[in-house]
Length: 269
Image (tube, rainbow, N blue to C red; front, top):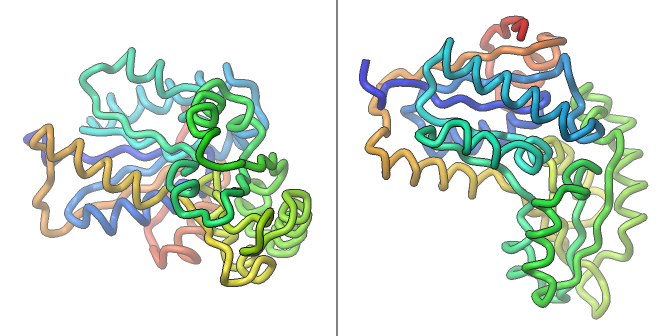
């Protein structure tokens, strides 16, 4: 087997990374993917950084030793912020793509120069996020909102709680619209949050732009694989799902949001 035929590893604390997987499969339709939901140790966004680093290392080791992945996509904003630099140091020959809140694209799109950012507390408090924010301070005003509990509600497909939290957090961010001083662009800074787009649209209206990271991550993954001459030409790509807890949640989410029916295997790592 050549390297090009090896799968791409993707992991998240739970089902949120499916939003990234969806974009990856659209950009790279011939690739095999192995998706790990670390739902037995979720949510990452409300955990200590050392916990997230340890889990990221364990999952990466597993994907390399058991699945011989040719690239890794850290499909979680919190894990990217906490662990990606260390992972790149430990595995310098492995192409690794992370996810970060799409502040720059949002600043470029905003007409009012006021951008809302919904993210986990772990992401917003990370050094990586602070550095990203600092570099863009002259481009727009960013209103940051930690969204405790929202990823978990989406994970559980609890529509009532998801809608209530979206309402609470968007109200806390401020007034949305296209008038001076209003927020016209909202960054979805957690990979779970695109799965609440319907609720957010109902609250904010069609005039507010919702920005997530799926397409940019997929394009970067494609570029890295092309650079390494590692793009697959497989006519019938394979997709494998694993979860460290609650496999039924991942299976239900994949069916509901991606119309996929693959079985989810329980993983003990």
